[in-house]
Length: 189
Image 1 (spheres, rainbow, N blue to C red):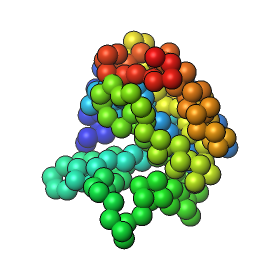
Image 2: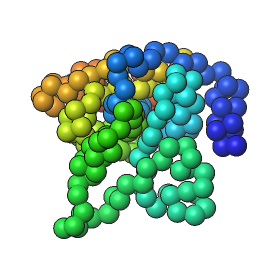
Image 3: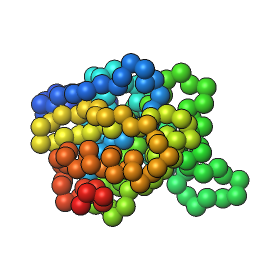
Image 4: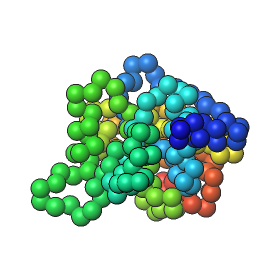
């Protein structure tokens, strides 16, 4: 039912899709940016479904409790413990990289800003997850001006985080956010 509601919102608001994952990319970390609105997830999930990408996304584990979990889990949510790291818990990067083990296909959606606010520095975990899991980074985007949800370039981590991040942020600097004042690309700003 919730998928139908999302599809209805997407369609009635006139959104379209653009791009696709190359056929040889079966596993990847997909960035979801700009992330400035709660509706970003709606448009991203429907757009990716229309592009035949089965996507999972990370969310605070607290959101998977009853009653919200009944609606969020079927959409592809993976609960992440964002509390203080304890001695017996592996890092979030290791936990997310481990999700790719033994899977033939997996796309994990990540917001590099880590919030819907304008930040001075993006989170780097997405990069290190892709590097550790030996998967590419797909640049998923939401162009609110043109109402397009799409997939842009595919970036293979080179090991040079600064260089790769600059390339990623240069792409996102061209994408209009729903709330432009809440989105920034520090390398480009």
